Image (cartoon, rainbow, N blue to C red; front, side, top):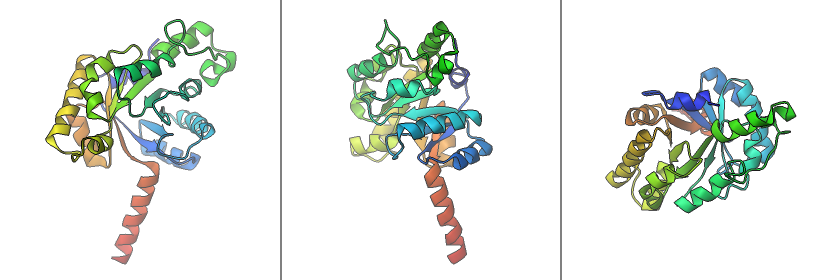
Amino acid sequence: MTNRFIETLKTADVCQFGTWVKLDSPETLECLALAGFDFIAIDMEHAPLTFQAAYRNTVIAQGLGMKVLVRLPDSTGAYAQRILDCGVDGVLIPRVRSVQETNDVMDGMIFSPTGSRGLGITSRAGHWGLKPTPQYVEEGDHAILRIPQLEDPEALAQAEDILKVQGVNGIFVGPGDLALSTGKPASHPDNSILITNLISIAKRLNIPCGTAVGDANAALQAKEKGFNFVMISNDLSLFAKSSANLLKQLKG
């Protein structure tokens, strides 16, 4: 069982563009879909979104034709099973620091006996019990993106081993947190080397690699570097900056 989103991300020279979602708003989701975003990433780490809000926004966004990733609140994976049973297209695990941490969170996202994810056939992912159990299990194991976020130099130094952990089929680097953790600007050559190395390893292993940027120019640069998926800004910042720029023009 394949996921067309995953297969698209593995296609040479293809980059999918999305944005973070921090608002619990069907209207803004519809605007993002009408604008043409390929996917959204619902942010449960840096936004006050409840599980119910994440679920509701997943249903709405997929109905509008966008793919949906959800960033979990933390790296423990405590929400992972419930989020997966919402029928999302993928999950981001923030600030994964080691191979062991990756193993631990992946275990809860893969069905037994390989992992420890429990059967939830009566969930949305199981079409409320209408989907055959073998299909539900096959899709859960092989058609969902499971994406650790690497945001520390120690984690990036272990990138190849992390990418080889069973269940990992996507990777993400957070340049902002990397800059904080290294104490060097995001553009510093040391950080650039770590990121370039990650892209190279991911390409060799045929695993989609993503990042987040602030604007369109940076998104195009990320595509040129070889990233397969890029989050550009977020719904709330897009609104805030547009409003600020409008008033700046009006008031000088």
